[in-house]
Length: 174
Image 1 (spheres, helix red, strand yellow):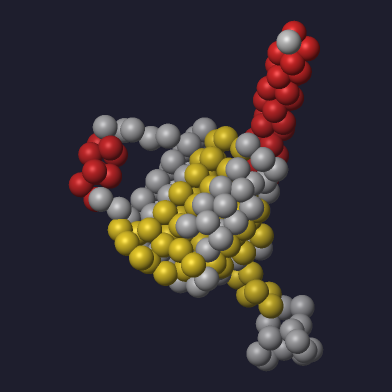
Image 2 (tube, rainbow, N blue to C red):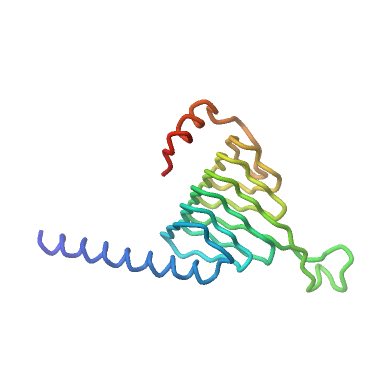
């Protein structure tokens, strides 16, 4: 019994150290961080990433040189990817594509929650309070308060705006 307890304490200690290392990595990579961040699993961002307050990554990869703005109280599941570049395949000098990249920005507003394994492509804005379902591929904008999912991601309902506003006014952020 004592050995199990000591192993559990050791695992908690190890996890806390890893989380601190993950946070330091994001701090060193990001262009700007407005406030507190939490990083529970290995993540990476670009120098063109701008993070709000209370940003929570559980395994986020931000790829490309396009600008990524993430608002306050953001939560991601594990395995999420934001891709802000794509290859020149139309007027290039080689096929299937050449070495030219095009960049598109991504904006994620306040209080957004992404489920596990969500992929967001460049040029997308995800509105305030939106929830994106696990495994979705976001290719177009998601409106505020929308609950969306699928491949490609589509809105299938909206949050209770009155309840959301009440919680927001009471500053009940997780």
